[in-house]
Image (cartoon, rainbow, N blue to C red; front, side):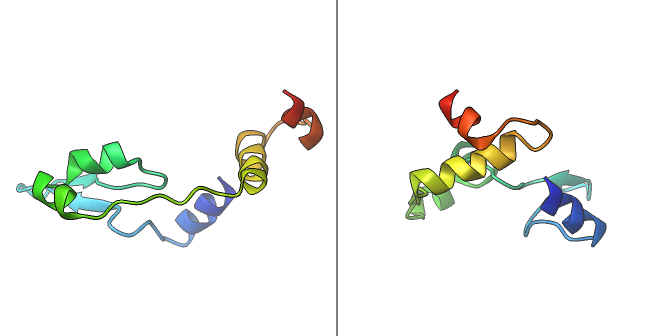
Length: 85
C-alpha cells in the first residue's frame, strides 16, 4: 500500500515488527493486519489466555470503500461497478 511504502522510505515499521531468537537472529514477529490466530502462534498460551479479546467492526459502507481502494489500486473499475460485482 502507498502509506506502507512511504513509511518504509522513512525507516518506520510497525511496533514490535522484529524480534530476535536466542542466537540473535532477526525475524518478523508481527506485521500489519496480523490475525488473532497468527498472534496466538507467537505468544505464550498463558498470555493469550489472560488477555481480554475484542473486535471492532467497521461501518459496512466505510468497509466497502476501504476494500475498494485496497483491492482496486491499480485497476480501472468504477466504485459503483465494483459494488455491483
